[in-house]
Amino acid sequence: MRQHTARGVTMEDMREQTTDDAAATVPRDHAFFGHPLGLMTLFTTELWERFSYYGMRAILLYYLTDAVSDGGLGIASGTGAALVAIYGTSVYLLSVVGGWLADRVLGSRRSTLYGGIVIAAGHVALALPSAPSSYLGIVLVAIGTGLLKPNVSSMVGELYSREDPRRASAFSIFYMGINIGSLSAPLLVGAARAWGGYHAGFAVAAVGMAIALAFFVAGRRLLGGAGDTVPNPVRAEDRPALLRTGAALVAGVLVVVAIARAWSGEAGVTMFIDTMSLLAFVAPVVYFVVMFRSPKVTARERSRLLAYVPLFVAAMLFWMIFEQAASTMAAYAAERTELTVLGITIAPELFQSVNPAAIVLLAPVFAWMWVKLDDRPPTAVKFAIGLSLAGVSFLVLSAAAAAAGDGRSPAWVLALVYVIQTLGELFLSPVGLAATTLLAPAAFRSQAMALWFLAPAAGNAITAQVITATEGVDDAVFFGGTGAVAVAAGLALLAIAPWVTRHILEGEESTADVAAR
Image 1 (tube, rainbow, N blue to C red):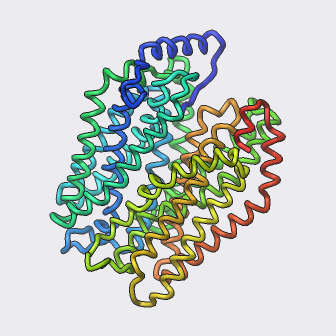
Image 2 (image 1 turned 90 degrees about the vertical axis):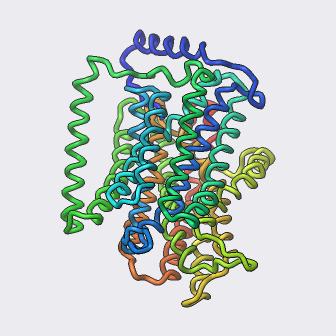
């Protein structure tokens, strides 16, 4: 996520020269599976950071909603699920802020370091048996993740020149680290929770983040100058405009808080959920309006941007379902799923390891498939398939809930639901990232990642609102209704796919844009 403000050719050239000078100090060796040793540093850092994040997330709902006498916080089930969803919204919104801070103030390396320290402090606070420290810990993990999440990936890119053919392979290795961390986290944190309670589980997550920080600090010399440069530092002449923008943003947030307060009728948890939901809905709308109205955006770029709008909506609805892994699906695992398999009792959080396991197995298959199909079908069709698969997964869960009645569904049903969602993710997520960077107007291309992060932010916000509005509704109805909406939206996108593709074609300005079709 890179935000830049063009001031003039001379200053731009100076910044580019500064970046080139820093890049020249980055090691370009082949010591780590044919890649620079700096990739090992970032791979290990991200593996353990994702371990800590997904480990905490795996048991968060259970901790929030379990009885106080059993070590939980005693929050109502529906409210707890909505809080977990809006927590996801907060992380993605804060990631936009973290990317801006890295670009203008801190640089990627310091943002990652400071974010990791804040995350570690948050996990330590969660490990303490105190409700106030737990809430503080949740806030700290969200803030720290917002600082760290967008900037580790950008540092991977800095290890390679633009012409280096190893770049794509490096990101494949890097994302494998993410999946190893998210696969192992529910297993180990779940085991710790079974042994010593929730705070023992959070302590394991804290250890994971400590290991991540240790590898990152110890491996700094392997990174050379990667992440040290602030790409577009705030200068004296920028400050008045930034102060005006900051004041406008603060005023806007206060207006949103006032609206949420009036809507919810209280100043508690519900108001917080409504505030974050409104911010998540307003942010992408503002982004699109600014882009469409910008004089820097050409007619061709507006055509591409218009084509991107339905793709963004589809991504938002996809994440609305997919991100329920830690909320409604976690609740279904604990309360409505048979947890004895072949005579062995399993922890409900273990189901959250199915997705990363499926990613590890299926991602190479999809990579091979796209090569064989010459990257076809078109982007809009891939999005439609991904969204429809997400909807189908909830229809399957709805049917299972209806068939179980007041009983429990077999464990394989929930595992199948996660696998179907993983298939949808592979159709939509990597394709969506590429489409975002290719379809964004040139003047906003550096901010494309921020826009993409707003899709899951809004999706989580929709989930939080739906959970709150349907509290007490039968599981079969909830999952069936949500799944039906997603399938209908997927079919609608499929119907307008030729229109989307036509607008992408009309907006093409170079052969590189063809990859988005």
